[in-house]
Length: 190
Image 1 (spheres, rainbow, N blue to C red):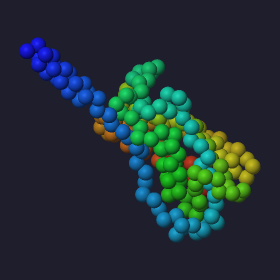
Image 2: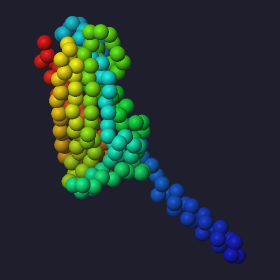
Image 3: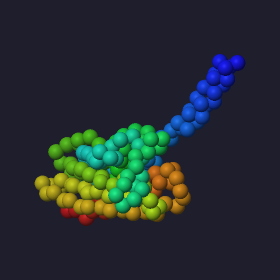
């Protein structure tokens, strides 16, 4: 009798613990690809941009989605995880967003040749915050015709709903807004 009671208790504990171990995985949504080849050459003579690197600090480089709980404390989620490394997701979506924003440009994550501009981005903030806002911040550095152009960015957006799903969507929107800002800066170059 005691053995069956222990077996039932063990089964119940296993069921309870596995129910609390549900993990969610998040991928930044990517905009629909524009047929860039059809538009290539229409505006700026096939200019080239290599997105060389998007780097993130250690606290953002792990698997867990980051949430700021106070002005000095951050929590790295253990059950709400990035589906692939965040720096890769940021780079891929930046290439996609810039491709959409820069018709006539070839934007790639691989070197294109000697006439390319080179973009490096350092992301210092990409997280939700206790006040219902998301933060997308950092700086970018562009090498253009031998010159270096450096610009900081800081975007705060209000979440529309509670939860990680909306937080990730708002982070993606902030990242897309920064891509538009970078594209506008690139379009003003000689």
